[in-house]
Image 1 (spheres, one colour):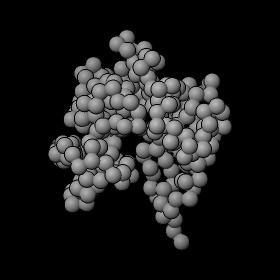
Image 2: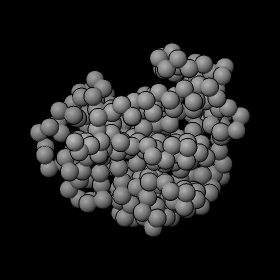
Image 3: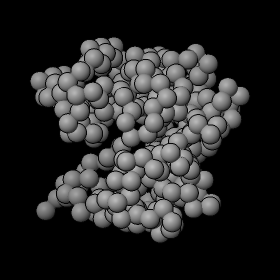
Amino acid sequence: MTSTKSLVDCHVHLAALPDGDNGCFISSKLLRSPLFQFLLWKQDLSPAHPREANQKYLDHLLKELRASQHVSKAVLLGMDGLYDQAGLLNRQHTDFLVSNAYVFKTVRAYPDIFLAGPSINPQREDAIDEVHRCADAGAVLIKVLPNAQHFNPADQRYTPFYRALAQRKLPFLSHVGYEFSLIGKDQSLGDPDRLRLALEEGVTVIAAHACSYGLMFYEKFIPTFRELCARYPNFYADISALTQPHRLKVLLHLRHHPELQSRLLF
C-alpha cells in the first residue's frame, strides 16, 4: 500500500525551558500564567527539571508525528525576543525566547522528521547576518510574531531584511490577528495589511491562521486575505489553529471560497 504520509506541517512550535546552555528564556510572569501552568500540567512537565522537561516535550511531539496517518514531517518554529531601538535584546520585555541554536540542534538530532523554522526579529542589529546564517544551516522558513516581538512589519527600515529573505528564498511566516498564547505588546501589529512591504520585495509570505483575527465571529481580515491572494502570487496562508472556537468563522468561510484554497498550507 502506498504511504499517505505526504503532508508537512509548517507551523509547529518548539517549546523549551531554559536549561543553562540552550539559549532559551521564559519570563516568570509568563511561567506563572494560567495557560502555561495548564500546558505544563497537560504535558506533565516540571520547570524544576528543564532538560528532562524539554526532552519529554520532544518525545510527546515525536510520538504524535510518528503515529500520524498523513503528516510525515514538521517545521519546528523558534521564537525570537524583543529588541530595543539599538537592535539589542531587551530581556526585561521579552516573555518567551526559543533560540535558533536550539531549533537547529533539535532538527539535527531528528533530521528524518523535523525541519528548521528559526525566528528572526528584523529589529535585531544582526538580522540580515542571521538570515544568511539560518539559510546556510538549512532553514526552510523564518517565523515572526510581531505582536509579541513588538515590530511593525511595514516599517521601511526592514526593506534590506526582506531583500535578504528574497535572495535566500526563505519564506516569511508571520502571525496574524490577536495574540493570546504570549503576551501581545501591540495587537495592531498582527494586521496582515502590514505584510505588503515583504510581498513587494518578492518574499514568499505565509500568513498564519489564514488571516484570522481570532476574536470569535469578528473576522475583519477576511477581505484583506482575499485581496492579498488576488494581488500577490507569493502570498500564502497556513491553517493552523482554525479548528479552535475563536477562529472557526474563517474555517467556514474557506469552505465556500475554493479560489483561496490553493494558497493554503497545512
